[in-house]
Image 1 (spheres, rainbow, N blue to C red):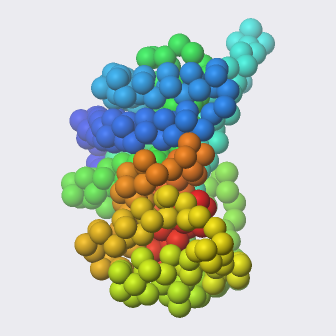
Image 2: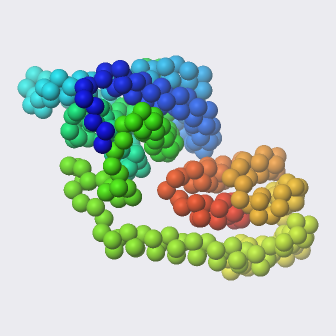
Image 3: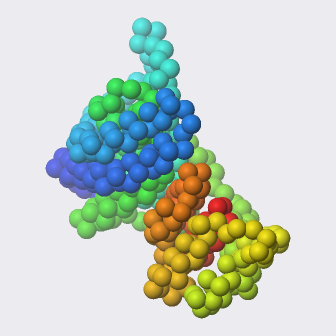
Length: 374
């Protein structure tokens, strides 16, 4: 690791500002998507009070996302400084508290702390390597040995806490705050690792290098996690991925037996699709039942996209386009089903934990799963 001969406050301030601004900007960019997800939840909510809460959260997030960005950046900078300054002063922090300093948390505050801690653990698991690299670089800049997670200024809790406080600055209702924060949870799994990666790249460009050979691709060992998974466990995980890919391939292969390659032929074979073959369900003949309105619209959508079958199936926006095409043909309950399927695939296809080879296979399941669900 590059060791600086003297602590450079300008450099550490630059790291702090980059982390704060980058995280806040990504939160701002994700706000419309999160607002849309909350709208889906509102439509599916049966409680009038719950529905109003979701609608309030969606409106707040969309209308005040610029305020949320500003507050998020401010709070990240503040928490970063609060954690770093005691370490720079070499005084550390005293973990002992007097009885006068210990107070009980209100129920709403306790719920927020639980949500923050849960989110922080997930973010740590998601960004272990990038987090370790940035922590090592901060240690190289400041000359401070690696600290416990709670004292680490770049630990994911910094970002989770900042987001919760920023939401609290624009919304007084605790229930609404939790709705917004928890809906951000899945996309934070993309945002925080990306923020770490950008900070690492910036410091590496300045010559702040670390030796990653010993740690690359391995779980990070910290005081909170004393042991890594065994090679046998890793082999089991790899085997599970292979088995999943094989199973998905078989489903698509069976679907191909009843899905004609020609789009026009597919429209003629409406009652003999992948659902019946894959699940061995009884297929009703056209004269035995009335086809639902959405089925013809779905097949027209498939035939009219102008894309090759494989290309169309692998498009991650396929379900969004399909929902628009089917909107007038669906009942209220069917719209809820299509929304749930769409959100499920949206979150699944952007999850970095899904291997790239599996992502394309999963994407091809969008329309068959939508038809099955309907």
